Amino acid sequence: MTHPRIVIVGGGAGGLALATRLGRTLGKKQRAEIVLLDRSATHVWKPLLHELATGVLNSAMDEVDFRGHSSAHGYRYQRGSLCGLDRENKTLSLAPILDEDGIEVLPERTLTYDYLVLSLGSVSNDFGTKGVAEHCHFIDSPQQAKLFQRDMINTFLRYTDPTLRTHTTLSVGIVGGGATGVELAAELLDVTRLLNAYGVTNVDDNQISVHLIEAAPRILPALSERVSQTVHKELESLGVNIHLETAIKEAREYELVTGDGETIETDLNVWAAGIKAPDFLAELGLTVNKRNQVCVQQTMQSVDDPSIFAMGDCASCPQGDDSTVPPRAQAVRQQAGVLAENITRALESKELKPFKYKDNGSLVSLARYDAVGNLMRGGASRGLFLEGWMARNAYASLYRMHQVSIHGVPKTGLTWVVDKLNRYLKPRMKLH
Image (cartoon, rainbow, N blue to C red):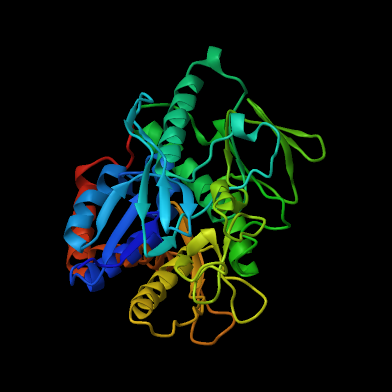
């Protein structure tokens, strides 16, 4: 007897949580075959990529190996990248797998499905800005984060030799004042202190300039004004140069050019402005919006095909009003729970439930310095404002909640103990 095959494309927070839940409820009970497809062999929680980029997060400790995880949780992991979709025959085309030297390991393959879930997340949107692809780092994946960390350390090392300095101060330009840009700015200042403490460099606070550049009238435009203003003041007190209502029209090797034609000198650039779904989604024959997001119903089914679902940042999911579900980590976590139930209901030929997003608030971490945010209470519109140690603990709990969703409570508890021990056993920063 063959079991229906459910293929989940993308092992991010939502995709891995969904595979884990379906593996437990369907895979282990042999009610369905659950397949998780991802081009990477490991998973890192995306909200932590800014910490991986600065070396504060050691990926060896926090990444999840899909092969080991799948064997313990009732699903099958397959490495590969989606490159084509045949809806009529319910077949996926997978791109060839190449090794680090570009040598083909596996040729192009096909994979059949009964139900397909697209959970591919998002990437930064450079809006076609001149020079961005050549002269800016992106932090959309662990690979990109590690590349940034390598170049960051090399930039700091070069600055220790006065003959190699490009500018008087070591300058980092971050385009985009959303959560990623804000948290990265704070981490960079903390990393400067750590690099000095470990004897890697001797760059003091007066020798580094971090520029946070935002086109909107305020940073964190998607969050409440109180959170935005509090974070703005905190960053300025740390020494971050904040440029508001400033668009970048060109990126060059050692400077950023604003819409007014002014230049901001930089040694290292990061582009963290705007998001879009991966470009290839627009080539699959599904209805997408201008940001390449798959258009779905409230049940998260594609408007074109009821056997195809999409969730998270790669989906445009309507809410009850004229808005869509926002691209936030808490949204995809909620969607994974509802989608697991809906797929089970689809297998049982039952009516699917509409997804209703619940805003639980937002939290922003400013490295070791502070954390700021608000938590929503019931039907309240303003929420509870948090700052300081309460906000830091609440922020840390977000990652623990993600770990619980993929590991369960016992293993998450043990992981927490190991993390505490590593604070005393290992350096705070990964230096290679």
